[in-house]
Image 1 (cartoon, helix red, strand yellow):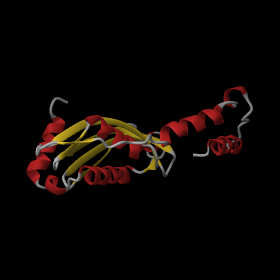
Image 2 (cartoon, rainbow, N blue to C red):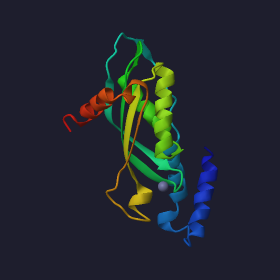
Image 3 (cartoon, protein in one colour):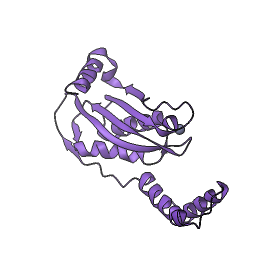
Length: 180
Ligand SMILES: [Zn+2]
């Protein structure tokens, strides 16, 4: 990311919006926005530490919080991801799954693509075909403008491999709904 260019662009945006970018409250806004974009859009490097483990049961991590940026409106969308997989000889540190979500959240995104990228990442890195994911998010571009549905959530889900059979799918949802 070219932070100087971002600052310059925000400065020009303020002018385009009819504002005076030199006034007190706006003077540091271009710099602040550039720092914010850096934080929101640059994912840290991720190391995949895997462990051999002969586990064939569903591993579910729920309520992984994330915040991303809608590429259609440059406004945040945020919520939680629930991810399950069935290990195929390898498991990954639980916190790493949260980092995988972060890796794909911190870029200009759409929810559907983010979901697919997370699934593909897990399939590739854990060498399993069996992944389930459900993402629940609020999109600021829906909340603050257009149809103004403040409480609307967008829910997307995807099931691959063994999660396509209804037994595992039901297990996923019952684990998800337990103790909520
Ligand atoms: Zn949007």
